[in-house]
Length: 503
Image 1 (cartoon, rainbow, N blue to C red):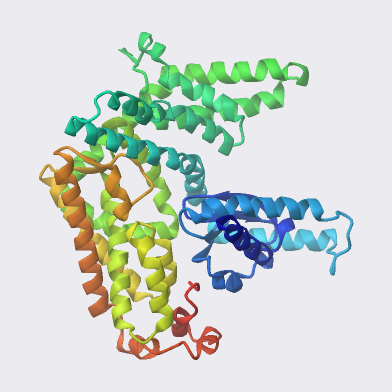
Image 2: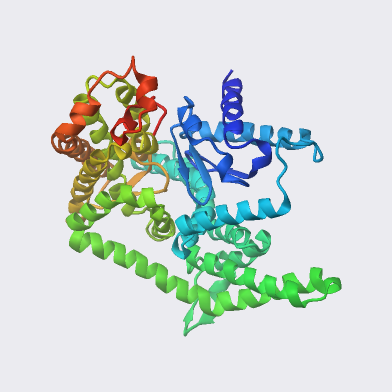
């Protein structure tokens, strides 16, 4: 039954993105179906937003359809199957209603590419997207291993099942011990090289035998440089491989290219990148600890308050390697619990909107359906369905996040560190991943207190400052009987009063 529902969702989405022939690639992250499209003009944004299963859409480097956690992982295979079926059944020579000439197609494509480049393709944003493409596929394993590590730590503290805890430790630690290999594999794939060569070079970093090698006057240690070293090694390997492809004769390519690629990039990794990346990684850990030890409350205020805007701009992807590096070094990242407070401010904001707009059934229905996900740290439904379209509440949600971040930052400043053993979840979903330096009970209490502060401040700020008198007059009306009229209204203030799926 669930499969039928997921297939129905995929079938409803496909024609609204231009059909199977318009989809050039398909991927998904934790909450979004990410599509590359041949012709962006064929997409019906409003119809997509109106689908019950769709929480919102984001037009970025890829066209992103927000479906929510769990759901997107089930809808994506069904969507891929439908696209494959559509491509197979489409006759290449079948006439269409309008056949574009080569010049028309080239002109149309150039216009679309120019518009998208002007809007999205800044070098920095392209770099961040590549970083995300490397690390996001690793998040499920990070979450799974992180939760197992948390369970194992609890069992050890309670002195339960001593015969099982060593096995759980091995299961939880195996992935992290080899994460550099996975980063190298994904990096080479993202930069256009042979993935397995990227993984092979990155594997040098975690090989135990590097302890016998001396570089820059000191012995290397396995894992030195971590994910940053792996990333750099795989990028270097990709460029060396591409250079070899241009100059090595085809008859020798299968022997010479991989040999030169692994040899040259391996030597540079051992006698350069491992040391340099290790220094950078150490610097990241030192800087994060110094920041929270000396300016904890202020740092938490800034990080918690700015995280929602960073997510909207896609700049939060730059933090993924930092989180991963901190987890490698310290066993947990102290930044994620602070950033998770942005979601708490968003939840408090949504509850205040629900209370203030007592007559707007559309927005209240959206909030009721999106709040459970919000409590679990999935912010897209509330961001795109409530606070961002309304404007002011998005700002007051950030105020709530800043307050929660300052709360956790303050405790870090007095020596009570709160961290997460994995990245990905936030909100209540982060509780199983929490770790710290003063015991699990205190860590959970501080994090829970931060969430409560975020909820309360987000609620109060939104309730009293989130609406102007004009907004309340226009929005606090019963839209049930006039939903179609309101949805078609040209006034910007009416936009949030559309159907619950509209964002």
